[in-house]
Amino acid sequence: MTELKKNFAVIGNPIHHSLSPQIHRAFAKETGLHIEYEAILSPLDEFKNTIHQLIAQKLSGANVTLPFKKEAYELASQHSNHAKIAEAANTLEFKDDQIIGHNTDGIGLVRDLEQNLNIYLKSKKILLIGAGGAAEGVIYSMLEKKPSELILTNRTIEKSNVIQNKMDVHAKSFDVNLNVIEIAKCPHQYFDVIINATSAGLNNTELGIDHKVFHEGSLAYEMVYGKETSYIREAKSQGSKTSDGLGMLVEQAAEAFFIWHHIKPQTKSVIESLKAF
Ligand code: NAP
Image (cartoon, rainbow, N blue to C red; front, top):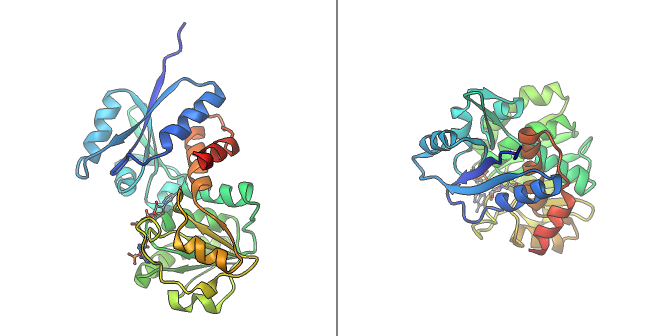
């Protein structure tokens, strides 16, 4: 009997830049699965209709990217723990008339740091810059690894305070100090890992953090990928190790692939081929 191809998609606006089709097709090839995976542009005010049309066309699952992760969470009738805590979903499963929302961004970041870059978060002091969906989506996964301290900062500091209030109960449960400092005060402390979860690099704007925050021996991680941002350039100039967010992208996709197909794909060769691409 011929195996029926299952259909998947990534939905966003804009979407032309998305590497998700390439990544999922590579995983499918490597694991011997027959799937279709397309990028779909949803009009900004039509996300719900887009999803329902795709379900009617027998889509089995979808990745969701900017700016629809909150809407995806709201549309889902069941949620994974990570999606519930972030109140955002980047992976949807369509099963038995139910929409199940997951969030794999945090798992993707932590796997990239620990498994690909060999930076283990336990007992480390971490600075997380940014207070948008990406920052909020990764905090719980980092807390699970029990760093000694996780410090939040953002251009609009009130947003960091809101996240800190919301996440403090989880930080306490993992015995992690979760604090907020103003961006200007960051260079007065030493951080083992500094994560840029802002879109400053994407828009070629300056982040406004003093280069003195970077040190030899620390890691500066930039969630934006595919270009050398000024954040990465400044970190390098201070002797820090650096990484862009390509590994996170591939690892969050691998976790979505596992949710849909119950198979863990290899990620290293996909990261390498995308770097060369
Ligand atoms: P978002 O919700 O729009 O949040 C944007 C954040 O960037 C806010 O904290 C904002 O600060 C800050 N920001 C923007 N321009 C800035 C500037 N010039 N200086 C200082 N701060 C600035 O976006 P998001 O969903 O969190 O995504 C953030 C970035 O992460 C995007 O570039 C996205 O591509 C990337 N990302 C990567 C992956 C991956 O797999 N590698 C996954 C998810 C996201 P204010 O609050 O002050 O406006």
